[in-house]
Image (cartoon, rainbow, N blue to C red; front, side, top):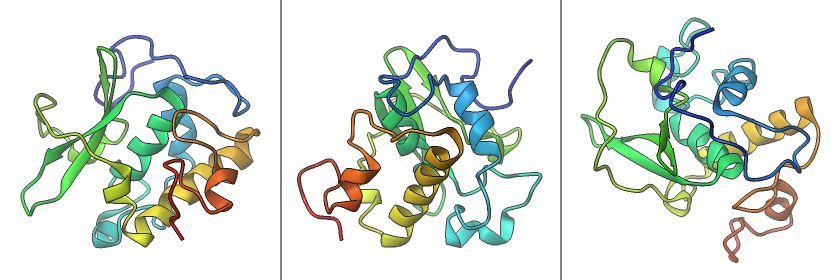
Length: 168
């Protein structure tokens, strides 16, 4: 079976941990998130574009940082017209973008883009809440406490964000 997201066939990217109740691959994570992405998890400025047919609209940063929790690596951003960044993941030599389908046939340039930092993105409370919702739903549906390179949801709920500073 083929997928529509960029990098789906780019190699095996194993999860950095299996403590969250399942061993993930990017394709497996995509399959799980397809049933979780919703209008609420979409960026507010793009909600009017979100639909059941185009579930990935406005999901890039929260999805990329969730994927980073699971697979490690870095999140990078493609500068879009209007000044916003479209986020995607790089783990070793593998580049994947679980939300690239929102752009249809538009070709995105995945080279030489700036790294995106969750501290910057999650300075927006609404974005941090959308990320937490995705993470909590994934945990609820598939069991376990998701841990990885950035700490656990319980660590965040206790007042830390995995970076040693308060986020509430």
